[in-house]
Image 1 (tube, rainbow, N blue to C red):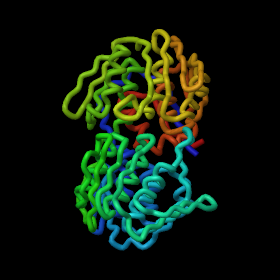
Image 2: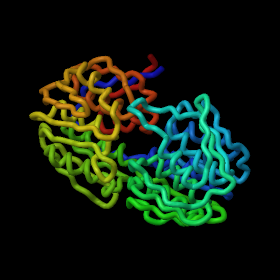
Image 3: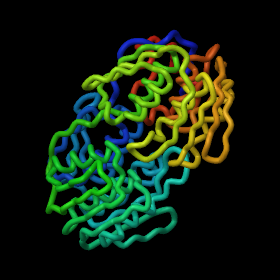
Length: 418
């Protein structure tokens, strides 16, 4: 096992390039199962989750070839297996996204229930509801879910909650279904738009991605194509908070500013000076951050994936901040770890009241999930002493070369074996 040793650092300065989005790369890799010709994906982040997804594709009969560090070639013409391995599915929740493509392409699929970060209940019932509407029969036994359909037929699917995963899975099942499918109350995240753009490059007919209503006209088959993954808005947000919390001045490159509007707005509210250009954002600290309130919401609201990092910032802000988490009920597990470092946080149901303190103190802490790990690294950068962050396999699931990128900005951070 490895851990990160993080020391109090000078204000971070310089430039950092954001990698391709994990939450875009994973569904697009899954969607590659629908293609029957070569597919080239660029700016794919080198992450543990991406590696697992590639293993899932190979186990199903796809050929996966790494052309360089961030470019992958996939050919699923010889797709010959509809059953995913428990060992792979249990490692990562997103592996469940192969269910839609397999159902669309082969008419059947068998999957283990997915694993991933323990940040709350994330039922797959909306995914299955969508498959049923399209004509699939669903069976569940002993931790497995099977779906079968002689022919999927387009229909109207209403999602009770704008689930990103369900929207993606239903989209991928519907592209080869007969007729037209409409998804109402669909998720509107940029990653949904990226998936739709990718599918359309392969020959699909998807319209309305990025709005609450997506329409998919089924086609006979999908081919191949080239696609570049969009920048990771959560990684961008994490480095933006790094500038604010360390009193630094950072230029974050390879960003789409429209995707991070809530992060920009809240950092400006906290007193930072933000300069937005075509594909980069500069965040300059103007002194101790001011207290702010945030409430996580589905896109285009404030992202739940930035809540932990902002709570680290709130811990040393001037005044009292309030954080309300509406998306995941278990997303305050990092609070106890921040309190070990001296943060003053009180939890009341889905709300956290944070009284800003003057200083944090280094401690041995553990990453309880992916974004919590990032928050602990940020806190370590301003804490007296050396902070030991354990369970960093969570961090490696979503951040490519995190310590190298922080080091390039002047951070004192080292990866060591436990």
